[in-house]
Image (tube, rainbow, N blue to C red; front, side, top):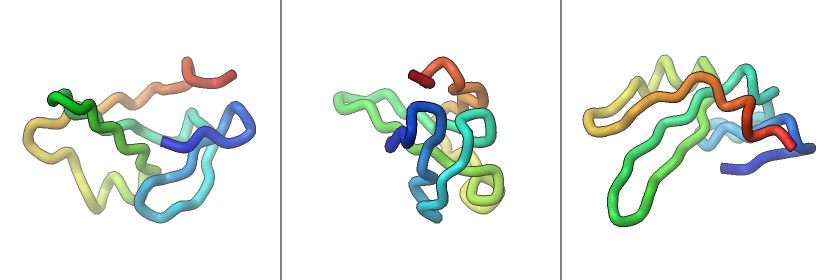
Length: 63
């Protein structure tokens, strides 16, 4: 996950930069936690794979 300018994140799929309020976070807890930031358009394409959870509000990550 790439936080840009403290209040934006880069989509891990299309690499565009969006405000934190406009992205979602796919998470999978394993031995190595896996997190992937996706914009709404990419989330529609990818969906939420089995075993992953979706966190829509990640604004708490702003610095």
